[in-house]
Length: 258
Image (cartoon, rainbow, N blue to C red; front, side, top):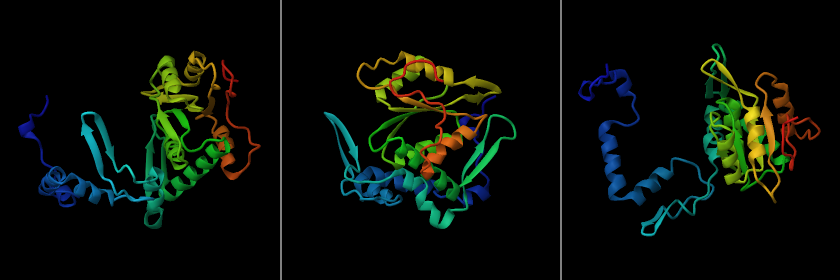
């Protein structure tokens, strides 16, 4: 039986005491955001680190519809998620992963996460990826997926995240629409006690692409059961370009993965 809205149970006093924002403070902040939005959001923008702080806060109209925020500001999302915490929180937990299978638990501190992200960013650069390139991720929920996302934005590339429950046609449409040159996936994802193979779905998606001029994307597979192939790929981050790189669909290839 659902609890009626009027019968909501208030939080314990110990939790309310440590809140970062009381109801009264929230109401005051919300009122300011409506009465003077530029001043309010300029103040909020100071909570993150900028390469170039914005001088233009909002620039919008509804006719024609055009909405821009912080348009002349420059920042790096990876730096804000990881690097800015290293000075004082390097040993604190950044990621706590609980796998679908019982007992599968991993922790990454901010220091460890930074090291993994830097390694991955170097791997991507070794593959020729850079600013403005599009990279599709068809990954299970895992620390590796987070590392990939952070590494991609670190080098200025753009990630297209595709839910690993989508089928081959939906995946192909998103690879096509984004113009991705690289696709990262996994051999399997674990969902509700079942093993769901992802590699065959990606191979089928590649077959569905219609690229008459641009090459087909290269596909890299994170093997959850054989992590040495992932480690071989990561060794590129240390400059070992001769390492075998996972299972690759070469550029221009259309068909089943080797």
